[in-house]
Amino acid sequence: MSDKKKQVLAFDFGGGSGRAILGTLENGKIHMEEVHRFSNDPVIVNGTMYWDTLRHFFEIKQGIVKAKQKGGFDSIGIDTWGVDFGLRTFGRAWRSA
Image 1 (spheres, helix red, strand yellow):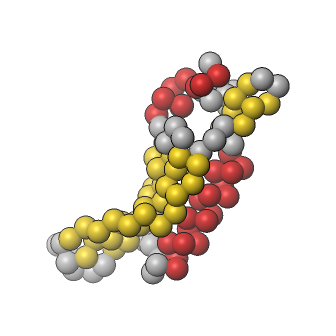
Image 2 (cartoon, rainbow, N blue to C red):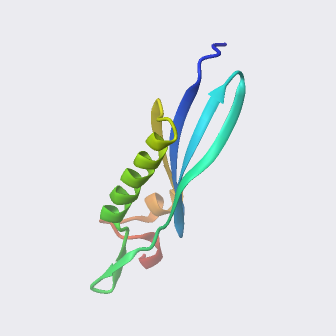
Image 3 (spheres, rainbow, N blue to C red):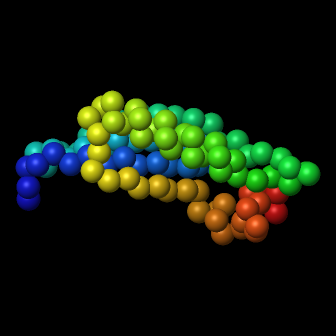
């Protein structure tokens, strides 16, 4: 096992909020720090709820900036609340289905 420090930026998009976590593996130990948190509110257009994708993109950029200020990272991962993908149709959020 390498003792080289590795940092990973992970985004977690939940049903009501999201966050960016900077995970560090160094000397065989894992440390995680929340570097950014944000609300994940849908937008309503003509009575239908949609994910606010432009807001998601903005929040991802904010998380990247904050993680870079904490020393940077080697890779990025994104996790979403799986139900939204399972029940989304034409970009609609599951709450409107």
